[in-house]
Length: 158
Image (cartoon, rainbow, N blue to C red; front, side, top):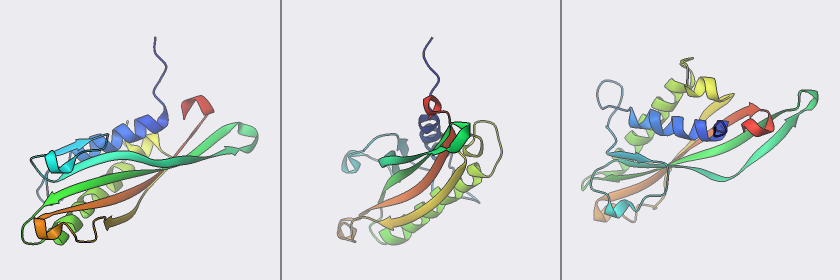
């Protein structure tokens, strides 16, 4: 039997699932055309918005004294791609709002399998344009939304 998935992998997969569940309507601006847990060559994708989810840099681990429980903080990055020939900045900001709302809702839901059950803490962090507006003239924009996630457990669980 294979080993259980690490809490880091569970958290990353949950972020992907939460973003895939976004549906435009009363609570969200846009339904994502795609969400993947890997880097994406955005210029080759057909729809928008597209989101790529990955762990940025090495997480920081800390031993919690006599309990032998560890905590590990990781920064999850959601890189987004949008197309809009008129106003890419507004579309990027609306996508960032959608991502933050979806993650915050899941992280406070208390539902089984949610980020509130997997992680000790989930905090939507910085969200910003990453192309300095250079691609706006071509009708598309790139952005990152960071999410700080803290998982805790025995070392083999992380």
